[in-house]
Image (cartoon, rainbow over all chains, first blue to last red; front, side, top):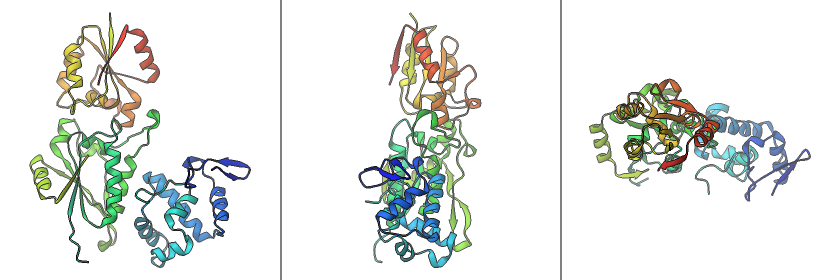
Length: 110
Length: 136
Length: 102
C-alpha cells in the first residue's frame, strides 16, 4: 500500500517497507511514525540517520546486535543497549527504525 | 552457557554476479553471525573474485554487494582465509582485494586485518579442522 | 559465414571457453560476457590459450560486466577490445549468426 508524503505517493511492500530506498525523504519517517502514534525526537532521528549512513556504506541494514554496539560507540555507552533502542522504537529497531529510514527489512529478521 | 561452540567454515568457490551463490553465502554468514559460533570464511578458486576492489554494477543493473564484505567485522567475522594459489592462477594478488578489518574491542578498538593469505596445503588443514563446512 | 561466439562462464570453473576456442574458425569473433570476462585478464593460467586464439579471431569483452567485477581495462590482454551493450548489438548485427557457449 503506498503512503502519502507531502502530496507525493511512495510505493511500499506488503509489510510497509519502502519499495525503493532511493525514494526516501525525511517526510517518509514522519508520516510512518504518525501512523504508529509516535513523536519523532532528535534521538529518533540520530538512529534513523545512522541507519541510512550504514546502508549507504555497506548496502545492508545492520542486525540489531550490530546496531546496538555501533550506537553505543557513536552516541555514548549509555545508549548502546537494546533497552534504549526499544524505548525509542517500541516495535523494535529493525521493524520500526529501519522501516522509517526507508531501508529493507534487515537480513535474517523474520 | 553450556552450549558447545562449533567451528563453522563457509567455503566460497564462485565468482560474484554470474550466479547467486556469492550473495547467498554472504546472507547466510550475516544471519549465522547471530548464533555466537566460531566462524571462518574461505575463498578458494573463483571465490577469490568476490573480494576484488572497485566493483561497479551500475551498468549491469544488479545490486553491488561488495561493500557488504566490509561489514563482516561488525558481525564478529574476523577470520577470512584467501588461497594464494587461487589468486595466482587468476593473475591476482592481495593488492587487488579489498582491505577488510575488524575492530578489537579489548585493544582500544584497534583495527586488525581480517584477511589471511594461506597456501593450498594450509587451506586443506583449515577445512579439516572445521566442525561444519557450508559450501557455496 | 562469420559467427559471433559468446562465452559467459568463468574459464577457471567451466570448459566453455576451451570448447569454444576448439571450434572457432578463422575470421570469427568471440565476445566474453558475464563470468566469461575473467578470461580476458593477464597473468592467468589460461592467458596463453586465449592469446593463441587472438591470431585468428577477434576477441571482445563486455565493459559493463568487467566494471561489475572490478576489472579495469589495463588488466586485460592486449588485443582484446572492450564493447558496451550497443557494441554487443553491433557485433550481433555484423555477423551472420550467434553461437552461445554456456
